[in-house]
Image: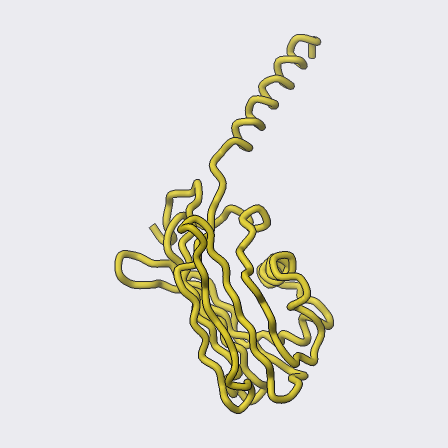
Amino acid sequence: MSFSKIVLTIIASLVLFKFILSEKGQHFYYRYLTCNVSDEFVYPNYTCYAKSFNRSFSAESVSLTLRKPLYQVFIDCKMMYKYGTIYREIMRFDNIDFCKIMEEGSKNKLVQAHYGLFNESVPGVLHKCPYTSIDISNQAIDANKVPSIFPSGEYKNIFGYDTKDRKMIVESTSVLTITSSIKDSFGK
């Protein structure tokens, strides 16, 4: 290739790269967060809420103390997308041995990405078992660490934390709004 073609290719690449970077990023806003806890496993002085700051920024806070250390925890996770007035499930993880993942890791790429994102967003919460408490204070989702794969819309996330014999420890339900450059929806 001649020198002028190389220069034009580099300039075109830089312009395209600048266009991609200037695209409007995504934004996460918690609408609400609720927790259902088991009195058998959690002391009653827990907190679980989402807080809004100036209607442009929101964060979650969860603080609970367990009655006894947990050495084995299983997680069920559902993510749902809102279509009109109903939510439809778009992603699900069932009966994942959380302590085993923290100890050995996982080969499932979705699980790796999910827990990697959570670990970066809330450092110190994900660690090897046993668990004696959970303390997340005013934690927002860092949009720069989440891959921009989710279309704009309202999402409901349900996380269930269970024992080996399927006794519920905590179930949290959060609804959040994602504003993204992707305007499609799931399943169209």
